[in-house]
Length: 511
Image 1 (cartoon, rainbow, N blue to C red):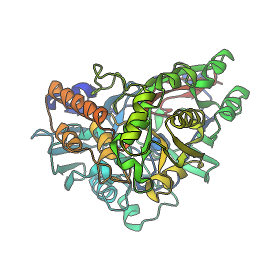
Image 2: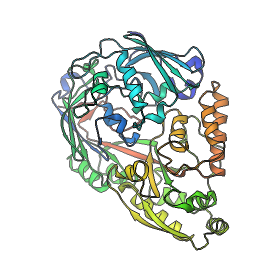
Image 3: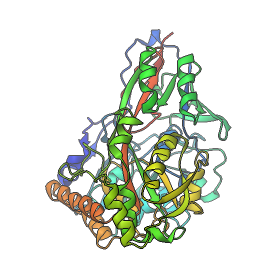
C-alpha cells in the first residue's frame, strides 16, 4: 500500500499539491490501549441533535448530519481530524488541466453491505443521481458535466469550469457513495453502503442502532461492536444524559460546557465548526428585498454581546462567510458595526420608519440567541414572532416549502469555501429561496473556483468578503459557534476531530 500524502486545503488550491495517493484516514488508527484491554463487544451510545430524515443522502436537509451518514456510507475523499484531505474510496486523484478534468483511482476490494462489489459504475451512478433536479446535493455538483468510466477502478470527471477544490467537495454529502443498483431501484429504506457500520434498528426521530460491518474494507479499524445514536434536541437534556452516564458521547452547547468540565467529564473543543446566520426570504416578506433593510437588521445585532453573554466566549463574531483560521478568511476585514442609530436611519430611508412584523424561526439550540436578536430588532421597529420548528423541519419551512420568511440557520462550512458560498448565495440555489442577488457576487465566487495561485485565490475571497459587507446578501452573518465534545472516561483512542460530530474512527471501550 502506498504511503499517504496528505495536504492542507490552504495548499491544496495549488494544482501541484492536488495529487494524493495512499492509505485512507482511519486505516488501523492508533488506540491508546492494547487490544486485550478493549471490550470488543461494547456498544457506544451517542447523543446527537439530529438524526437522518431519509437513508437517501440526496434528501439530506443540511450538512450537519453528514457524519451520521458516514457511519454507513463511505466518501470518495476523507478528512483527517485536523481538516486535511486524505484518500477514502478513492486512493488518488489528479488534474492535468488546472481543475477542469479530474482523474480518480478507486480502492480495490471494497464491498457494499449486501456483498456486491464497489467500482467505478457506482461512482458514476451516484454522482449523476446527486446531480438530479430533486437532489439537495445538486448545488455541490453543478459543474460536473460528464463522468467517464475508464475501467472498474479508474474514472474521469469532466467539469464545465475549472474547480481546483473539487476533491474537497467529495469529502461531504456529494461524496457519499451509493450502490448503482440502489440508485436504479430507488429503494433506500434499508441503506446499502460501504461504511464501517450497518443499520440494526432505526426508530426515526428517536434512536438509530448500528452494528459493525463484517465486510468493510478496513474492518480491523473498528474496535467496537456497535453504535447507538439517540436524538436529544434539548441542550439541557443532553448535558444530563452525559453526566448521568446514560450516553457515552455528546455534543455540548457553549453555555453548558463549563458545567460538564466541572463534573470531571473529558472534553475537547471544536472551533468555528458551525456558521450561525439569519436567512431572509423577500418572497414571503417584501421589505427584505431592500438591501437597506437587510443592512439595518444586521447593524442592529449585538454580536459581541451574543458571544460573551450567551456563548460565554465559545464562539466568534461572524463578519464574513468564511471561518477564522480557515483558508480564505480575511483577517483585515472589519467587524460589522453594532449601531442602532444608523440602523434606524436606514429603516427610515427605506420607508419603514414604523417597522414591520413577521415570523422568525429558530432551532432549539438557538432559542436564547433568537430571543436576544428579537430584542435587538424591536429597538429599530422590527417586531418578530418567534417559532421553534422541531428537528429538520426548519429546513423544510425555509428552503423546501418556504413558510417562514426569517430564520436562524446552523450551517456547516465546506473545506473549500467556494461551494459553501455558492450553495447559500447563488440566486438559483434552494437555500436562497427569495433569489436575493448581489451584483457581481456570484461571478466572483465562480471565478475563485478556478484560480490556481494560492495568494490570488485568497485575494478573491477577500473581495467576496468585502462585497458581502457592503451589500448584505441572502444571509445575515451572526457568529461562528464552537462546540464541546464530551465523552466517557471508558472511551479510549478518541481523536479531536474538527470536521464534524460524531466521528468515531478508531475509538475503543476500556474493559
